[in-house]
Figure 1 (tube, rainbow over the protein chains, first blue to last red):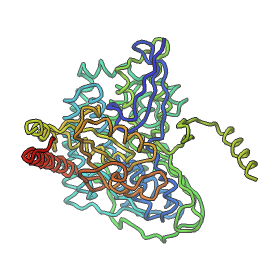
Figure 2: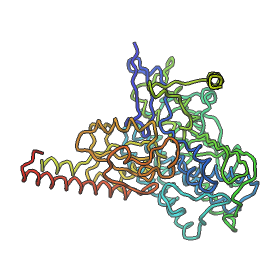
Figure 3: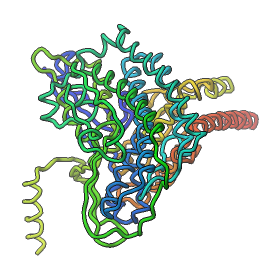
Length: 396
Length: 154
């Protein structure tokens, strides 16, 4: 006997419209089918109709939470096309803004995870302290969420002494509070009972399903683009890649708390060692013909952008592989009961939240829908090729 | 009717529906519920089900796939119901305007009572929209009283 329940597109456990169909056996989840694509807007196609500078605000709005990672990835990518180095000071400022963004994203996640297990007190506490980092981002860039700091050839705003003073004071508060929350996470029975052994992803499965970011690192695998393929000023700024070996949601919580502390240290290092000089170089509007790929460690994992230019002021093709798309396959694995590992219905929200899903980043894929029948289906690459050949033969 | 409207004005329950935005507005809506901004002092609470909600807070550009579901969720809400469009994408399509899968604004799909512009708007602006809607409910109350005085069935 099995029962199928749909979750979404509008559901309190999901912050974004996505649909999951769970197959249940009594109290346990035995199968899950993710149906993605509600958030598909057509950003990649729209980018082909705007020039490189106009595309910066659009790329920023691929994801509102990890917007700095996306703009950084985009600007780097276009700079690779020009084959020009940007000023060192700009690279340091990019790292500072990126790490502030990571702190805000990770604190947000810890709050949401606490909310999903019904621990709303912790949620409210963390979101109160998160306002400190939001104020710092507003101070440095002029906006709370969408920073608009990165641009092609550098950054748009410099950091002066007054900002630096306020930034250091804010970081002290954040460090103290993050240490306090980490202590709570390690001691508080409510969190331990609800998070330990939930949403298990073994290291083999994590690699097999190409998990990225904190989800992968919580499975004990040391992988971080900042360390493996340093960009901006990450080749000079020292940090530790945080890993944890419990492979569950609890591990992901500890990894994110530790990464927040690492980020705070990185920002302090950047402020201490920041070189002088200009913050931006001017580049011509039209990059040379070519293609390039750039990678950035977004708060949720590895973000990959690809660009192809054809000598005009607009990109010929732009492709984004956002981190959540890498994690969604492993999510299906985490939500399926196998042998001794049982997934309760009550654990669905926190496991879903565990990968820090950002559906709007992810919905770059399409599904075939027949509007007349209202039915959708999926095709493999070979089936699609066969269909296109058949359709063209019929047309000819 | 006066008492019901008074209660309604003091406890507008919210339904948050993301129609395909970039999440920036969503985190600002959630930030409006948390201690610094605390929209709960106006009686507003976030609800999971559309059947419990008075105000639908819509964030994000309206994508082709979500449009039909949005109308369905709206129809499930009990009368009287109000819609708040949060963010530029929701108001007009914003930065996504011209993309093949995006509608040009929420008011082409649903009747909208309050617009909150910004990309994303600050939580203060969202709190202000809720307060403005309470005034609107209050003015509705007056209208009902006038109608009763004239003798219309309400």
